[in-house]
Amino acid sequence: MTMLARLVRYRVTVILGLTLLVASLTVPGFLSISTLSLGLDRGATIGIIATGMTVLLIARQIDLSVGSTFALAGITAVMLQPAIGIWPAALAGVLAGAAAGAINGLLSVVFKVNALVATLATMLIFRSIAHWLTDSQPVPGTDIMLSVALSKIYLEIFTLRSALFVGAILLLHVWLTRTVAGRNLFAVGSNADAAEASGIAPGRTVFLAFVFAGALAGVAGVLQSLTTNTGSPVFGAELIVTVIAAVVVGGTRIEGGRGSALGTLGGVLTIAALTTAMEFQSVPAYIQQVVSGLILILLVVLDRTVRPGPRTHAAAGASG
Amino acid sequence: MTKTKTGMIISALALLASVGWAQAKTVCYVTAADAHAYATPANEALEARAKELGIEVITLSQNFDVQTGTEQLNTCIARKADGIILWPLDPQAYIPGLARAQQAEIPAILINSPMDEQADRFIVSFTGPDVYEEGEMAADSLNDALDGEGAVVVIAGQAGNGTTIGRVGGFVDRLTEVGSKIEVLDTVNADFDQQKALVVSRDLITRFGDGIDGVYANDDTMARGFIDAWKEAKPGEPMPPIVGINGQKDAFVSIKSGEMYSTIVQSPVEDGKLAIETMAEILDGKEVDARLPIPLTVVTKANVDSVEPAF
Image 1 (spheres, one colour):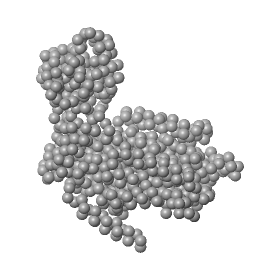
Image 2: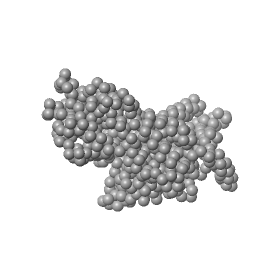
Image 3: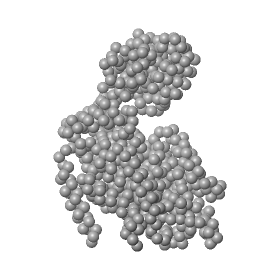
Image 4: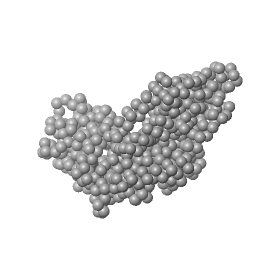
């Protein structure tokens, strides 16, 4: 393999490495355990949602409504607290996320609405329901001390949600690379007809992918609401772009059939490192977004112009 | 094995780095936005005053996204800032972050907007406008304009919004307190929106017509809505005295031309300056009040040329 092809193949690792290098040279005190822990926690919300999105993109679907699902799940988890207690309410929040995913799946599989259109519609609907449930006001939870406890740092690195994220992405990696169901997902994403001909049920696979993505957006939303002790109808309004960027930076193709969990991990970490580094330097928010956008374009262009040999689904863009 | 080595290098680097920036005090400023009519001048004033005070400011913009803000608080703590100035966009969501700042012994203050009482024990002070006082000042101003009697309409902001509650409550309470004979015909919500204010003003003018002796709008934008509705319904007739809040440029123009009676300047520059000055005192180990309001100025035709508009 040529040097260039190798660079392209491991481009996420390369970009992540470069980001860390530049950041550590320009930002005093950047390379430390506390920054690593911060970056992980920062990436965790995006990462948990991106884990679900990876599965959807591989299946050649997309869910634009995850930000709204995120808000709705968080609101459910907070509003039900006084009635049924904190943990049952949290579970209800995750289930609300899964239900939102099921609605998307139903629209997409049974009613054959294009996923982009269907989830654009549900994005607006779920967001409006969130506003309607809360009268557009943030809803406070019952126990602020729980929020403080939940943001505790374990082993100097992990918070509850960053541990969940890393766990989820590793499980997804195993599922995608070691199980038949995981491989079927790639088959459905590459060519649904061919997959069906070989005995896979693409409809069922796609439906479950939507439920999975919705449930994970729900988990992220519930965690967000618990750590901030607030259910807010405006939470997650800006999430979707970052989530898709993280997954695509990680080498998963929006056209389906190709992608990897470890790539998504790399993508999430890259974006988290970039944001943290630029924040440490007080770079204005709009410039941060320009930089993130440029890196996204760079990576996708690299992916298109230099093809690193034959398609290897699990390894593409994997961070080593 | 390699892990321990990396760990050692990392800690060595961190140690080296921490020696480097121990001298100048660093304040982390989590602002509402970096491109906004009110926030931008507030940010600039805060940064300029910080420079004079010899304080380094790391400005992080939430771009009106609460989640971003809560994460930025963590950045401030990881960066080991000496102090945190937070512009809260939500009454609750920042509390865990503020609690962690307190654990890390980083003093935090709020700028511009209040949070719920539960946040009080995690912050040292709250600097920003007193919206209740703004309502009281508006009542005094309208009382002067009408010589203590007449019928007025109130165009309020959003229902349930803290600023609206303060600005309407202060107004009504003050009128009772001074024994004014001003009677409030009706209070309607127009959500701080000029277009909505235009629509509700048309209704008010149809219902009460010349019975309206004066108008109190919760901000200048909505005052503008009433002016337009009046001109449309009663062209050529004298405008009843209108009192607004904010001190926007177009309100100054209206005051000069006689279309508005007064406005109250709530200066973003003072907002920004007071926050960093308060933080400077905290860093010097001085005691500060838990609530520090910014100065408010009533602007009428008499002083409109000598006061700077807020934005």
